[in-house]
Image (tube, rainbow, N blue to C red; front, top):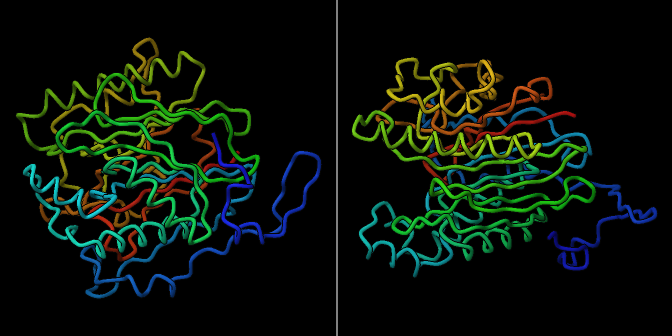
Length: 349
């Protein structure tokens, strides 16, 4: 259930509101975070072509309050924690890559930078991977509140007992924008979550995922394709319920039909073929990769994988939404949040 206006911070209520019947319309919208606001957080971008100069492509202009536009964002945020104690507990379990999160100040910095990025882009639906428990998600929501970017958290435990990484959603608190949100975990696979909502009379279902890593490891090929087959079953069930399924997140794989920056990236599995063509009763695939709309191949990367700029994070949309895509881009701004980059798609209804 969405937070009511009464639950918003007091400074949020200073916005000029015009009330007509039971509908609330905003006469002003929140100002996007300026590039200068982020300057204090920037470091040299390891993904930048020019040392010290990150790619700051911010995508097409977007009115987050427009009732007929929907912006979607997916981002692997690399171990978003609720506290330094959590970092130490995971390190004690044998997890690596957490040494920079032993310090509370570093965790706070990650939350603030992530909140900056979300506030800058104002997505209506956000899917995050590698969030460690509900405490971490709620801490992020508070950081967003301070930046006057108001979001409803949607959490479900992924069931990942070792890495403890959850796939979570945020939806923008915009009156009359989306409705009837509910989140749940599919039975299989682990590290997946479904967010159902309605927008412009359409029933949408977002399947957020984080698939098994190492796409070039042949010992993992069968298991990764099994995960894809499980996801195909979820997509088929969502379609049977009359919902338009959108699958997004960290696929940890390359889409051979949608080349990325590294033209040499060669998938060894059929993960994308299985997921895109989830309904065997229909000829041809039911989903397409929104990255098709990123015309510049130099921009099609979300991660540096073994020295190559490659795209492991994707948003797949149903064919019925192909004519609704108005923009797709990857944010390459310099940041300390993650070793991944967020993917964003704008839909115009």
